[in-house]
Image 1: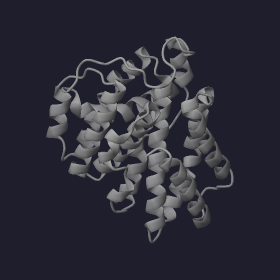
Image 2: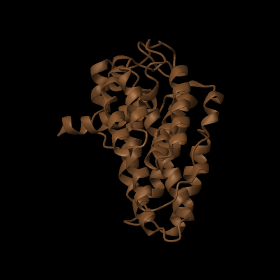
Image 3: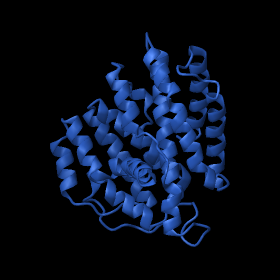
Image 4: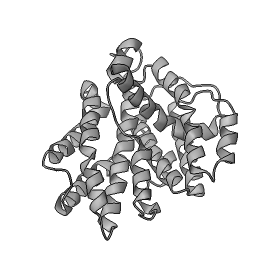
Length: 278
């Protein structure tokens, strides 16, 4: 059971990063060692085996889950909801870069799900900028880039190619003990996914399906807060943890389906948190 749960979070965390990295594997094949502004090896970070153990047991849905749901519900793609890819080079602190790598991962999934080819390329490029700045790139086989280009018109194949790069990214995170980095990326992606969904729900003529989907985010939010709990006192995490904890308390009053009034409240809370990131 524990191994299965470990595998699920493993795929989630590395999926967020690898989706951003995979197209640019031929650009920089030498991983850089760089301070990412969070505790690094020798700075109150648990040994590798403890980090892996700490990250096991969390079941958080991928960005593809929520963006694919929006697509299947028949909602139109709204470009303005995503974070502008041109802003990638504007983020200064390492915390902002890490969080927005997660944000762009969700935006990338959103564009890919709707087969927005130019959007997909733009968000891959934005992610590449942040990845290089953070020094978390890893060595992939050049065929990944070629296969991305070959499958740019095939949604399922594109996602499958991305999936194959998961192990490489996971190995990098584990070997470099970047557990705080992994947690922040997950947070950025979750926040962006819920932000997009709340705004789609507000614009939909019949938003019943979206209200149900948002209500179901209670479980993933609980897992996310638990994921941050061990590092909540790290300065780069504390404000984010507080914002997510407040949303978690709000969710205590949400049943099987969210009300329109609750939707408005959630939209305000998630927008405030998201704006503090982007």
